Image 1 (cartoon, rainbow, N blue to C red):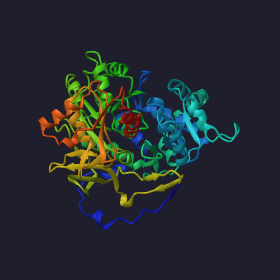
Image 2 (image 1 turned 120 degrees about the vertical axis):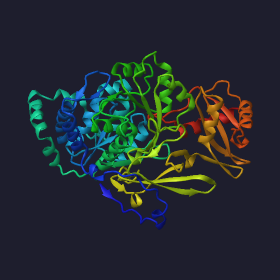
Image 3 (image 1 turned 90 degrees about the vertical axis):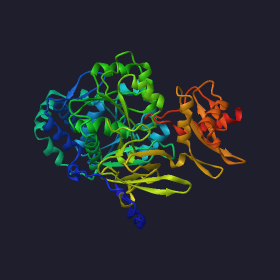
Image 4 (image 1 turned 120 degrees about the horizontal axis):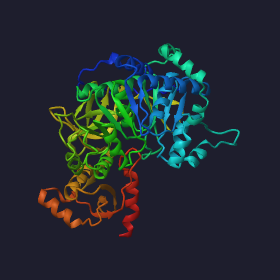
Length: 546
């Protein structure tokens, strides 16, 4: 991988930074596999650390052993520091593959299996991926057989563009002798790993953006980035989560929240993680939460509503805290979960930041905010014309990515200017350090000379119709430049009711969408986020029909 020189930082970047709370940078100067070995030594090789729906828990010892077995088998088919495509659901096999590749110095490039063939092809090209690790069982269940066949197709059958390796074939090829050698290797696992001369600042994983704003970008996260964020989260929690807890993670591991907060953070800190392959199984997930007695749950607002509504009495009683990210938490969601006794802790992050930047805490929780910044995260607000309360958030810190891989320039790492990432989010930070998200910079509309946050309008809508999902998009208007369009799942949505509420509550009339479009389902990405681009396109198609 070549590195393109970053532009020189502007003098302005040195001013206006909010100093981070203390964080031990020395703890990040290792690799993921070494951090796993250290956690196993610290918490005991017999401690159960992973489980999934198959209900065959993995201890630290078995996780290390399985990782060495898989890694050893994949090593002859790949090269040190090569990006190796991984197309797997969030189950134990995915975790074993991840640690197995990193044990032997390979870089898992985790592909979003919900992204579609076009975006997958783009990611494979951008990441210079020539080998793909997947599972026949998974491809059949997810109906992705033809997608992978098309992805792998080259000039001829004898010259595929992508070599596909199936975990089932790897497992069949593991002999008793292989297992015996792996047991011996486990005793000197650190020495085996160090032979590959992987450094903390080398690439650990490549994740890919959703592609909703153009071709997917590869986000290169180093070992130090991921370890830093796992440790930042744990330090920030301040004892709210401990090795006595069980964390339930239904989020996909191609999503950075699911990967770091839902897998690496618990494993590296002695906490048992329960993985689930699809966040969409609303009835099954509450049952498994009950069976595993999970005390923490990670999810997004959309999924949380589904679990709360589908759960039987008692299913969610073990959950003390729910950590929600990726999208704003609605008041209706908080109401649904309040009846279970669980507290929703809203957080915030970005894939480029590995991803967590801020989070609320038990006993220090302000609904509507996303909490305080994590230790080690420095922040600066860049002024935005038309917005007086807040600015565009710039961040730096040990968890901020190494750089991007861009479409059309495969293999070229584009580092950040001075290690600073512009999140593209408009936020405010109060005197107590609490961060409030105003919206994406791209999710503001200019109406009558005023900047209007689409997220703020959506919050108003949730007050009127709390039981349904709503998205506001701004579309071109021939007379006023832009107009607000509401896309809602509420069947009897009426604009007059919105106007009455806005007037009663003192909201500007500008905030009331000019057009109301009712749909059966609002498009959602595989990560659980609203697909704003698809929703806007849906609105464009429907508006002429009114």
